[in-house]
Image 1: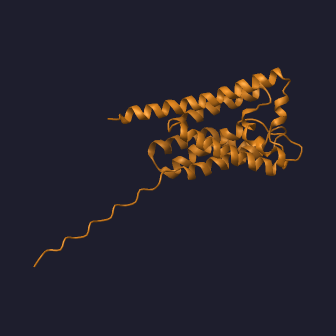
Image 2 (image 1 turned 135 degrees about the horizontal axis):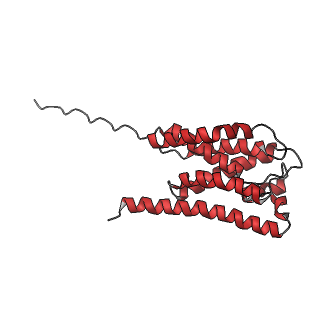
Image 3 (image 1 turned 90 degrees about the vertical axis):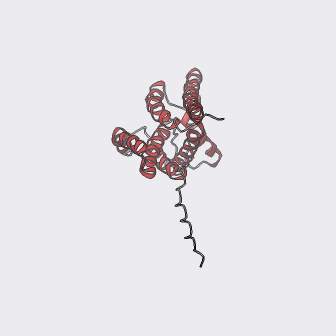
Length: 204
């Protein structure tokens, strides 16, 4: 007989491994990039260039410097590991939705000639996913997590939407939108009410 607790532990372990694995890929890529004179940075999101549209998929794994990478790694792990408690499939689904939405939004709206790299869009997507998940599920634990994330990251998100030189507010904005979309798309199906049994008719 399958042990439900063991199954939950296995899903959580797989989720944690997935988040750690993605973070490890970012660091390996940055080491390679640094050794190659940061030539990989040119493979980020280049707005409205159809031939470079696939770059939206790996731009989050590229960073301008180790400082940039470190600034993204800490919140990426903190938020990603919370999502990991729902398993690897959930982490991958949220990440995929956020990467596509933030990437497409940035590709469509960022200034011409710019190149966008970094996982900050994913970080803000993770944050808004956790906030949206709590609001939609109305489960006490998930709602509490959403409130904490909102308090910790709310001001940072608002600040990041103000245009700053060298910072892509588009990536942050569309990452946040992607997180809300993921929360809505991945919310559990509402349980329907069980139909009431028909009253028994008594015989005459």
